[in-house]
Image: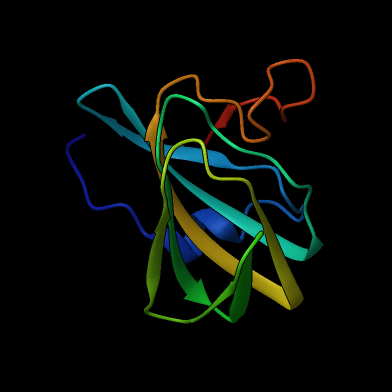
Length: 117
């Protein structure tokens, strides 16, 4: 990487929701942006934590015993193995960081294809 990455510009290149786009890689991790709206699916990641940073809008991270509400500029890390379900009442934009190859649904059979922009 030899120049700054403009996250807003990267987000403007696609409209699909719940389909993360890799914008950078470091130390075996993908740095991704994603647009979200509505409810995702209940899932967990048995081998890795799940990092969420809200860039725009608001989301709820539903856990089985609580709901964590996040606004722009706030982040939350779901511990590995914890079942969760992200939900956004209106379109929101997120920054995600995950080990390269981590399926967004926790299951490679149902995960969105990983795309790089």
